[in-house]
Length: 166
Image (tube, rainbow, N blue to C red; front, side, top):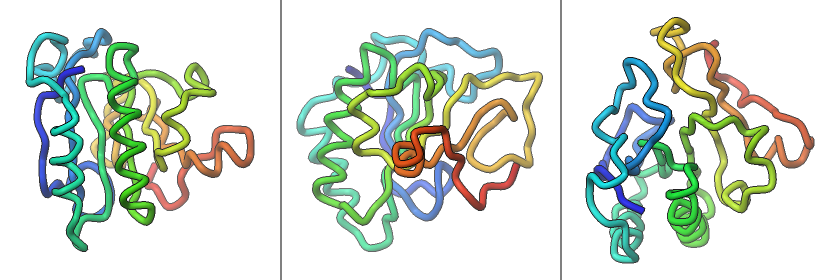
């Protein structure tokens, strides 16, 4: 796996101040994607154990409310193993902080993935330019869902995160 960048204090990708990592590589190539520089799987930097340690160090700050994992495509088969390793390490070290993941893949097609043992929110669905809406929270188009993963696993059906503006 490779990554494009890490933001040590991000206020635009999830609630509160967060650490964010943008993984490298995506095959969706959504028209007007906000991050086209992350599409090439060969771009960016190598994701290694020191990358995880760096993210964990950045999050060791009471101002940091959680970790955001974006892309590129974090749940692409070439990335999901590294993303799962990161999410597991983060949740073990910071169980009270939340993890948000953005993916073009639908939750329904990923049921049973180990990643869901560690993340709190999944914003799923490909960005669709014709459904773009500036008023939406944490997503760019109205087809995308902000899913409460612990509630979804408990209820055994997709449960949207409460309090999100539609």
